[in-house]
Image 1 (tube, rainbow, N blue to C red):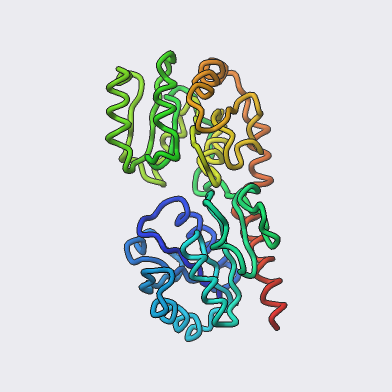
Image 2: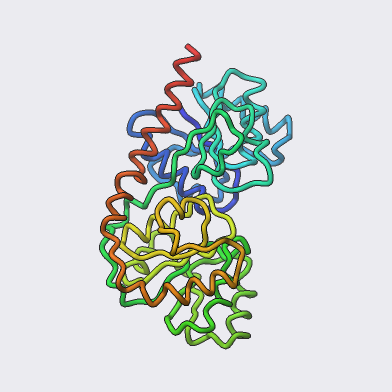
Length: 325
């Protein structure tokens, strides 16, 4: 069995980390190749990778290049990640016998890119609505983290790319009556706007934006974090939820992605509602030091590991490839 994973992005973020870790784990049993932009090759180690110019998802020439590579290298199955890659995979399926699997990592206006492929995986259940051949396989916590219990002596964290969808502007506005320190960890196009908002609300002494913390060094922040806030408007995961629980850090935030599967309803509010978020935080943050996360961490290990995700993904591959024999 020879599997190719297709990602179309130019930057290495959450989806790319997901693909890399999945392919790396599954390479223990079968050959895995990641087809990606050269700009992210340096992040991928111990897994075969190749760069094929994709460009427009509808370009016949680009589709031909990819198809030629897949056939020449005897790829058994193409696993597409995200909407653009899945649109390309759907076209590959029309003109070849190669099996195509798509993973939905986040909310889209519609699921057309993921229709008419052989199987669909969603990282949360809501993403699979209306998809008959969908399977829910959630994200996993980072196995490279030691998972030591946080001292809870440090600031509260909010972690993610600085984009509108992450709701960091709502979070900053909700901090006006809270005395705890807040570190927003991430980088992205909203950095300047968020810093201006912090200055405008005179919250410089309580809120910091930290942009020089990469995926591997984030564990240093988790070791002392007193809490994690997820203020997102939409989410596929979020993976930071799983990482925080692995370090026994209490989590509060919006009812997005898999949050409601792990976090009690009284610690959640509706997304994209700043007043609701502020009310929730002012009520819950004083309670964070007293929350015991041991039982929740056990649940995490039982349901959200890379081993479980890889095993479920392999079953999908096996069913598709055995059916084509």
